[in-house]
Amino acid sequence: MSSIATPTPAYRSRPGPLHTILLAGTVPLFLGALLSDIAYYQSYQIQWSNFASWLIAGAELFCGLALLFALINLIRAKQKGGHPLVYFLLLLATFVLGLVNAFQHAKDAWAVMPAGLILSGIVFFLSCLAAWVGLSVRAGGVK
Image 1: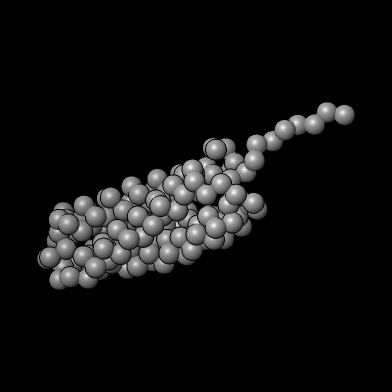
Image 2: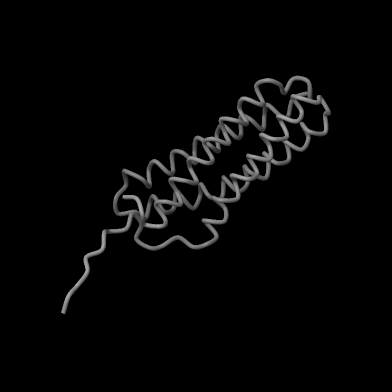
């Protein structure tokens, strides 16, 4: 009989599909907010700023729930450092900067630019990075 050694997973149990959906849902919402900010920057139509505000609110909801799942997975992980910690910290940074971005977008429409556009770009980049790290850890491909 031959046995195949498999690497130890980063988590004790595989996360459910809900966590993956929540994590992957943040990226298009933050992307939509960034694109709405770009449209507002080019056209000065106030409705684009309103669209960005609502998209950021939805992205914050998804990101917050994914952050909760990441915290639970970090607590349950055998290895507290490495990818589970990096994933949690990236999601935390995304959530905090997204909240700052939401507060920026709560200002008068003319006061949103250019800080709102810059924050939207940073938050979108962080959400992509968090999804990349989070999904690669879940797939078991990266240790």
